[in-house]
Image (cartoon, rainbow over all chains, first blue to last red; front, side):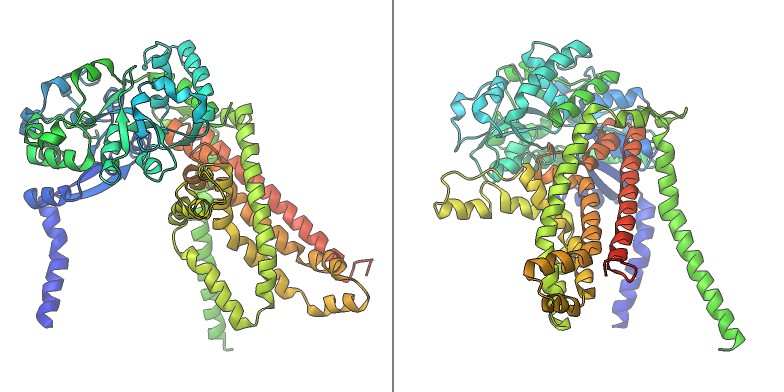
Amino acid sequence: MKNWIRLFATTVLLAPLAAIASGKVVVYNWSEYIPEDTIERFTAETGIEVVYATYESNETMYSKLQLQKNAGYDVVVPSTYYVAKMAKEKMIQPLQKDLLPNLKHLDPALLDKEYDPKNSYSIPYFWGSTGLGVNASEMDIAAIHSWKQLWDPKYKGQLLLMDDVREVFHVALLLNGHSPNTKDPAQIKQAYELLKKLMPNVLVFNSDAPREPYMAGDVNFGMIWNGEVMMAQEEDDTIQYVYPDEGAIFWVDSFAIPAGAANVKEAHAFINFMMKPEIAKSCVEYVGYATPNKTAISMLDQELRDNPVIFPPADIIEKGEFQSDVGEAIEIYNRYWQQLKVGQ
Amino acid sequence: MTKNGLANVLSFRQLVITLTLGWLMLMVIAPHALVIMTSFMTPDSEHLAVWPLTLQGYQKVLQPIYFDVFFHSLWLSAIATVVCLIIGYPFAYILAKQPPWARAVMLVLMMVPFWTNSLIRTYAIKLILGKKGVINSVLVGTGIVDQPITMLYTEFAVIVGLVYVLLPFMVLPLMASFEKLSADLTEASKDLGANALQRFVHVVLPLTAPGIIAGCLIVFLPAMGMFYVADLLGGAKNLLLGNVIKNQFLVVRDWPFGSAFSITLIVMMAAMLWLYVIANRFVQRQGGLDDENL
């Protein structure tokens, strides 16, 4: 008994010391975006303790970082255009490439993009798309091919849209033949007019876990992320993903290090660890989005590697468009978004 | 009591008062002062709120689009309050008439679910109201309807959620009123020839009015702020005032406007509490010794 107490006391007293000795890293990531055992594996391998927190939208992460003067977190995962925005506002810091040897595993096709030239500030973690979600047991999936079909009056009060101003406007701008990243108030207004006609069809906005209304049978048609479909199919394979003719919405979520991060070295160690092929592989298998890690892709099962829901063919990628920052114009988007939500 | 004992009591009292005041300063007054200050500042996309002071935030509250949200929110909360009252009133009456042990058991039964986080209970309602949920399964299974009814993600679902979360706040003050209601009064009015309806309208209703008003207030005001109920059950499209505030803080990042909206809500709450005090005074005068009709 005494021994047991002594053992307990030493463990409890020394555990924090051990943690201090080998450092820690505070990771702020999207919810449901990492396999459950990854963090344990990281700590086991490096001795670095991980404090893990999650968010549901870029806006939340951005607000929180600003509020804390860019400190408090060591790794964040902003999406495409938020990388550009946060780099411009000096909220994230340049990466030290010599601490990221695993960078060699990444596909050059997904590096050095317009939103972050030379990947000075960010390392892609996952990329994916927003397209049409269909419950094939309730609907004829062969007939679904276009964003336009969302406007069909027969879907009155039945659709799911993302609870994300940029993604919803992306669809309308695309249909109007405008750039989804436009800053032109007249084009945004035109998109709003089109979306106003879509509102009667909308049952629910959801960007938390859009697969859930599909799986619960409350929604059979609408927008969805490809990875959510992959997750849903593990339980219910009637939920399918369709790349619309007009092009899907593409995005990349990337690791970045806030300017005020306290554990910069540990943050690099974490990002480097996440680029290890076997870790990247387990991430794809669990989360269901596409990894930019080409070594990991070659290790995947044939079936997963050839699954067009995760890895779309080149012509579909070609047709899709990536989102970029719209600067101050976001206020115009937001104003119309509020109006749509209250039915004006 | 010795002098020493009295001094002890005094210092204890001082300690308690200091602690309470300190707590209120730190946890209530300081945050509110911050919110009030922010509500008069200028929004800024990089620094959230900056000088100079302005009334812009309050001007935005008066935009027509927010009038619509305001009235819609008011409407949803009002219906939820009325439903709570209709369910809570007889329930509180029955509770008050029970012997103490039975009342204690019933109260515990009512409160136990509320030890679970209300967010989780809201998720549970989704399972009940969904197209493949409990209600629809029964309706379709028994052949009452052919197609499942859309209940989730409608105003109806929001109201169900609000009623479910807020019902105890209606029942408790009502029960207190019923407990105070003396059986002598109803018996006396019965002896004087009043029928059941007259007894209810002229005796029971006026005497429980403070409970009704108190219950309605503590259901109505929080109802307007419950953004997660509107998000989860209303499909994020039946907005409550709480949703507007949350969006301003987290999505649009117009903190001064969000603060101005919060302050407006607080002022409304204060106005209603003031009405409550007046109504209470009126009710007490009517039943009290100085009532000239007595």
